[in-house]
Every structure is written in C-alpha cells, then in structure tokens.
Length: 334
Image: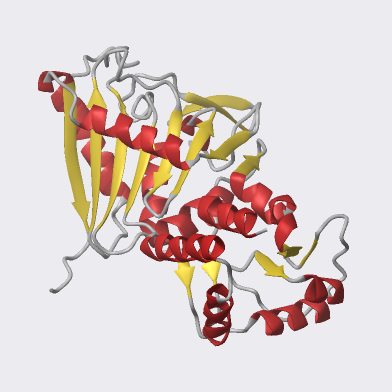
C-alpha cells in the first residue's frame, strides 16, 4: 500500500496536506516500520525540493470529505483524496473499484490509487482534435510552470514554421481555403510565461531547418536569429517579471545526438513525450486527425532527455550550432 501511494506521488503527484493535518501525517509516519518510514521521509524531502509539497492553511481531509458528500465547497487544485476504508465507506466507495468520483475530485482507497481517473489522466493526457489549445494550457502548462524554474521544449522541427521552411497551415474561412502561419512556438512561450516565477528560464531545442524558405529566400544564421528573437520578444511582450528564453538549433546533428521525438519537461519533476508534434498547437484548436497525446516519462527517461538537451547545447563543431537568449520583464531587487 505504501509503495503504491509513494510511487504515484513520486511519478505524478503534488502532496497537499492542510496545516491542521500535518502533525497527524508526521506522527503516522513515525509509527511505521523502518522501511516504510524511510521511503516516506525520502519522498517528502524529494517533493519539497521539487516544489510539490504544500501545507496550506486550508480545509482538512475530514472537511473536504464532508463538503464532497454534501456536494458543496470548492476544492481548488485538489483532484484526489486518499482515505482509509472507514472514511471511504462513508463516501460510498466500494471495495471493488476502490474509488469514487464527483465534482472533479476522486476519493480513493490507498491500494486503489493507481485506478483513480485523476491519476490515469495525469500519466497519459489525451486531447482530441477540435479541443481548444487553451485546455492544454490550463490543464498542464500553467499549473506545472508555476512550480518550475525551468521548462524545456524539445522538437527537431520546432522552428520550421517560425523560420518559414515548413508548408503553412491551410484553414477554411468561409468558402475559401487560406494559408495561415503556425504559431505553436510563440503560443507555448507565451502561455508558459503566464505562470513561471521571476527569473525562470524556457529552453527551446531543435534542429536547424535543412529546407529552403518557402518564399525562396536563403535561410542564413543572421536571418534565422533575427526571426527567432523577434517572435520570442513578441511572445513575452506582456511579461512583467524577469524571464529568459534560450534557444538552440543544431545543423544536421550526428546520429548519436539527433533526436526524433518531441518532449516537454518541467524541472518540478514532470516530463512528457508529445505525440505527434507541437505543430498541432499552431491554431486555436488542436488539429487532427489523431489525438494529441502527452505521456508522462519516468525518472530514467527524464534523465535521458536532459542528456540529449545538453548534447545539443554543447554540440561541436560550434559552427553547426545557432544559440541565443531573449530576455523580458523588469529586474527584481535583491
């Protein structure tokens, strides 16, 4: 039971313990066997370091359950409440399913936590074609950016549309089909900057486009740098706190460095494999035909992604790399 709860919190959770419940939690951990006690203590230290352990002055678990059974109250960011069997029975949770959902919150028995819809959604988020892209910002980008100091967007073709080497999107307006630019990079930067704290960093990593621009112009590094920095500065125009956006493009990366997948990583301990690509976020609604999937990565996979990003950032020869930084916001006092 302890291992399942710990694994879930470690992989995809934020531990929210009301200040009034904290003493009871710490006392319960003290009473555990040596192994379970050690696992819980390690988890609490790790979650605290990742900005994922909260002790607010808010409703206790008992108060939340009373509100839930009465269909009243606002639960804020709470999506899952883990309870013992007695409390679960009072909430109508049966032993077969091990959880019950209502009002956007799951009530679950500890050993059934992995079956709770909120946990399943956190580990693999599906967004169907036609879903407003703002739903992704609200469900993933904003809450995770608020807990992070650094976010990395990794896509070999990340800059293709921004630099004019990709075929423009075609959208039907009235009876006509028209070409429209895809602004997924600018949108991602803008949405992440909404909740990232002061002095945070967004890192954009991709390949230097190999195709010519669709307007026939030669894509020199000077042109690429000017286009990227103008677009990023525009995305950050409304940001009033200091933030840096670092970009890195590598020309024809070697086989041991080149990446074919797309990743979105947050340094609060969450990282996603994005299937199929970020381009589908280039319009107000997600484009089809497939669902856009964000699958949570484990710790080992997250480390591999960090190593790949480092490989791009330090790629040699340096002449094959285009890198720079765009800053925005007012400097904060010391």
